[in-house]
Length: 279
Picture 1 (tube, rainbow, N blue to C red):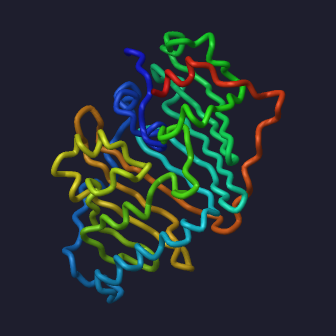
Picture 2: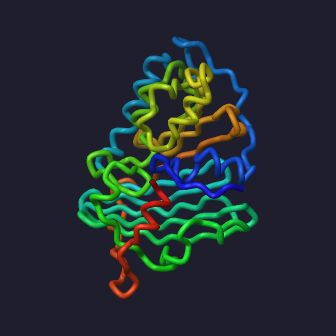
């Protein structure tokens, strides 16, 4: 494996970096990847017109904008979880890329408490010792980040004006076909070529999908209050990436906790080698 610097959107850093996905070699076709959605305008078994079903999905993301929830994301053998607490202007995300058997495994614990950000980096796998600048990366410590050096880097920064790390509102706006499949359950297709701003999708993967990007199958669930609780995109194989399910969940609306700043004795300033790794 050739060690490379990481460049990605917030969630692509955790899940869909093409090079890491290829090295992990864990991508498998989702069970529903071949599902055929109903035609636009079809009637759901419950009698709900497709237009109403799409509006229900659009409405389901409204509560996310309040910025008080927990979330998880998974795909390509990697995971992310955390919470957003906009009332305290804080958020936390824990990411794991790969596993110890991979050529390279990376764990990130990101904490944002406006105006500061910290990250703890862990590396594992057979190629970890070859990461550039390894000895200066302060592994095991929380590294305080210079906001001027991470501005615009969605792998490390957090925008409290766009509080959803997954960008589910952007994704649901790209829905092209949808039907209700049960109580609070939906299925259809989404044009992800219109969702490059969604943090859960790497723009490079969207490009690799080509025409397939215009009709990616999905399923979704909402809770008893109509709020989005689960969204699963069934990403087709593209380029070096195998077919995979990208799963996003939301919970604890209105009940997330504020992120806790790391103890001062566990904090160091991030060195240049750290920024180089992500640029």
